[in-house]
Amino acid sequence: MICTFRNYALAGVAIGAMAVATGAAKADTASEIRALKARLQQLEHQVAAQKAESHRAGNVINAAHGGPVAKGPPGPPPPPPVFVSFKNGLYVETEDKSYSFKVGGRIMVDGGGISQPLNGLSGTAGFRQVRLEVEGRAAKYWFYKFQYDFSGTGQIAGVAGGNQILGGMRDMYFGIQHPALSTPFTKDPLFVVIGSQFEPFSLESTASSKYREFIERAMAVEGIAPNRHIGLAIGGYGDNWTGKVGLFTTSAEDASASPGQNSAAFGVLKGANWVSTGGGQYMDLAGRMTYAPIKDEHQLLHFGASGRYHRENDATASNDDRVARIGNRLRSEATVLGQGLLGAPDLTCGSYTVAGFGASGSAGHCLRDVVSYGAELAAAYGPFAMQAEYLGSDYNRNMDKIMLARASGVFAPGGSRLHFGGYYVWGEYWMTGEERASAYDLKDNKSGANFGQVKIKNPVSAGGFGAVGVVARYSSIDLNSGPYSGSGLANMLAVSPNAVTTQAIVNAGVAGGRQENLTAGLNWYPENGFHVQANWTRVMHVSAPVNDYIVTAPASGLLPGRQGAYINGSHSNLFEVRAQVYW
Image (cartoon, rainbow, N blue to C red):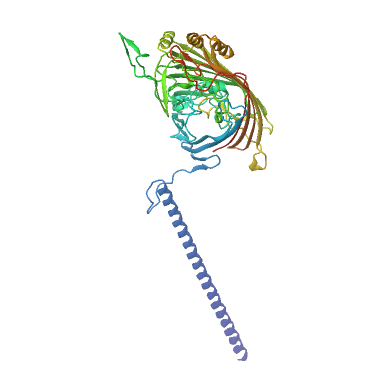
């Protein structure tokens, strides 16, 4: 009995222990379940918050693109992403490269002085260029560019035509490069450009001022090359060649937009009466071809040729001074200092008046057409580089109109054929090892092959000193054409016995003057987009013109000179510096 009782007691104790253990286990399980439920609810709240944030972001994107704010179920996917860069201006491009947009500009500050200023400035400083530009691509095949210069459009030293009379418009064009324009001999399709653009003529003329080795273009280029005009052009390129040709007319950098209208003295004879034709603007047909038989990152050999046919129509020096008064804008390769020693008279025999920014005149029709041409050479080998060009212009004139103008008392020197020309050659050495060949560009410059920014090996931002180079240039231009020029013309005029003889002498030929310069320069490019340049120019030879400065008419005696008497033997030293930033 005692054993049985013990057994029952032990069994009861065991059963009680089991019950306690089971109750504790149940309590632990319930706690774990409650904890899991709490964690699950927390995760659900986080997921809901993330969905709400994603929904809000989608609404912002849709609003930014002009689309409706998403409600309810998700709408169509957002637009493809775009690439945005501030490295060199503001640049935005779509992922498929069909659309791009760039905002850029440049600021150039020039200053300097002259040892023998003559008709220039002893010392001055000013803004040479302050430009804002927008360019890009649309619908994959269309491209455009808009550029405006805020630096001023006034006259220089009171000279008719000044620097830029009509305003600040520079590159303003649009174009297309479509697969339909593909050819078997071009690398990419041909492109068509419409608007204000560089005429395809000359290597240095079509080079951007941002990348030039010298502050100013050589005199021959500035005096003969056509610069920007409104027109239509077509071009193409291959692996080592470029070509472009176009038809052009008015330029925003002309002295005036309006050609001289005909008058009774210079109009068209119909029956017994002279009648006005109303005035027709000049026309240009220009083209340029380039070829580089050697072209890689370290060495380059480049050849090029340019041609331009200029039909004067009713244009005169009032609206076409770069051609009709060739050389009148030349400023001894230091524009900010204003020393202008050269310039031919109005070769159209036009009569014109300049008042403020406007101009008016009558066409004399002495100038029929002008044929200009140029040959170019550029080479580079490592840090060494050189460049040279020759440019010429042949003027074809109407002798009967010249005689009519003289009989009417209009100053009309020269005969039926005139020739003007010039050249430059320069060399360069990059002391910090940069290579100009790496900057050679065949397709981005819509004017043909040219050079961009050299690749700076050690910019200041990377702990280096930037790119440092030295350059030297010899340039020449001759605007004399005829039997008398230079000191010979001055001596003949000095001993002429009367006004009639003097008139015959000055009418015998065109004396626009001749000048030769030697320029040495130092360039420092601390970063892409920042340049500091210094140029010293020595006038090696100058014979300033007499025509259009002191002339004699049969009935009026000496006419007032524009810049003074004949200059010979002057050897001015011009020093010019430039600091520029572009983006």
